[in-house]
Length: 342
Length: 274
Image (cartoon, rainbow over all chains, first blue to last red; front, side, top):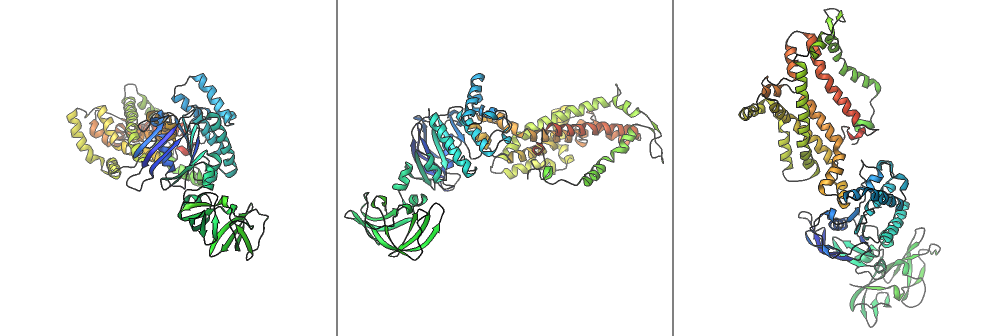
């Protein structure tokens, strides 16, 4: 069973540069899968290495199971890490690789053998025990790396973009595998990724990091429904922003008075709505607009709308075909509008 | 850069034959002379054969077996000690970034840059004081002067290709720093270590000047015998000694290449890696 992980005001800087990580605080519950999400270079791998003990934070505290581990060597943290590359030991067979952690713990031989066998079975690599790593494909190697990390039943499982080197279909399969193994084993898991789709599919909660700072730490839905800032909303694909002023239960905007289902902070606000939430119909919060562009994306059609000098983006099912230059009525459903502090 | 020489570009066979011939041809008269009984101008081949040269090499009371033994002991010890010193040095230079690294590399290279005669004079004076002059340990120590720069640089190249990620993975799986080094780093650099050791052995095996200066004629190695024979006028003895000198070195090289090449892993020791 996994342990509770807490980061408290963790900062890190390499040399004299700008901090790679600044004041990161977050708690991961036992058995929870948290995705550390952010663009490349945002400090998420630094955070993972600090948790693993491969880096010492410049300041702040890391606690596992309530106990500080800042001074603890990586091999004593029981925090197994899977990297972007499989990093199998090239001079050992697959079985020797998987058994590495057990040998380091001086586990009895018989017990180790059955554990290695079981771990290989769980990643569906049981027929490959005696192969050399170089004989395996990239996906197979990464499955072995996963087995190698899980065989010791670690208190923390740390995954650093483990599938980013694999092709799309394999990546999807591996996500399913990780999710299943993580649920079965109840490992407290931190998963670093720059792919928001991957984070949404896998994570119980997402910690979004920009420039070494935590932006938002919530369940995946919240990033779509209740983004904390404009940058967060934009990172999750919300492209529509409407400036306005809140008061009397509605927000005054260039598109008219818009009613929100959620409460808006008083004063100047920015409303945001996802392109797929905009409806082309009359009703509450509706207005007339001109279609200025159309882009067919296969599963969706994206239209650009323009009204009162504002442009909006709408995503519709692909069978809805409208011509550029047409006038339409668009509606922003109250339950899909979200107000950000301007 | 993997196998740019090893597997990427294959030389045409004809070129290989010419190169091989150029390397091998000078050895032909050597072999002929070593087994010649009588060979006068203008005969193309010896007119009589004899085992006099071989007899000299293996003569029970003669100096050759002892000299070969000295060469072997000093060579093996030099190789082992050079690797022992070169491994941490190479790891520090190739694996890590630190201040004044350039200066340290310069100092490591100095023995190659400075003429060995110049530095060995100073070493000689010190060794006399320490009682190491004219002794086998003294010769072994002075052989380290030209070998350590090579082993350190070869191993620095090996470590420069390592990212340290394998070791990090090992650490998170429960290996201490020392275990990670023993179980992961060392097996990974072993081919490079073997190449460096072989280099050191061959440099020591061929060493004449340093052996003469520090050994003072008391420590007799194969090159010492070879040089004195070469300045005499018995080509049979000289050729036999030259063979005794060259063959073990070639054998060591061939053996090392074999051992290091289990099933197509020759790229591990290609010049690209070193």
